[in-house]
Image (cartoon, rainbow, N blue to C red; front, top):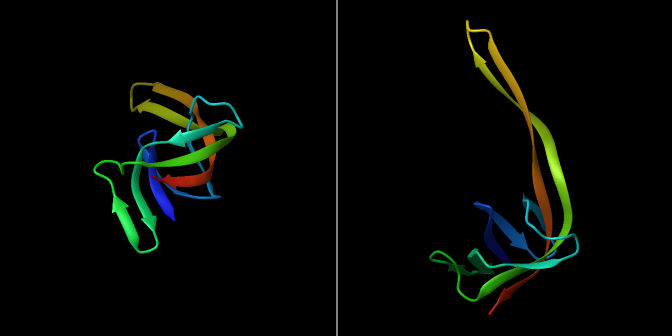
Length: 104
């Protein structure tokens, strides 16, 4: 059984026991959260597709880590004008471990 959930404008495949990283959520490590935006629920050959979400289905997850990703550099450059700017960025992430998929 798996579900496709939406968080931060992106879609993730959620299976019980698996984990994935999403954009930072305002929860502490160890907190249990419930993801309500379930777009698809698949259980063997039975597939429910939401329009836009599947009613009565949620995914329970535990926050296992709050961390920051690799640093990336963004360059601005204009030729022949002696204009160069470098800016760095590190994105904050939350790692979620899926506990169960509740299909009510």
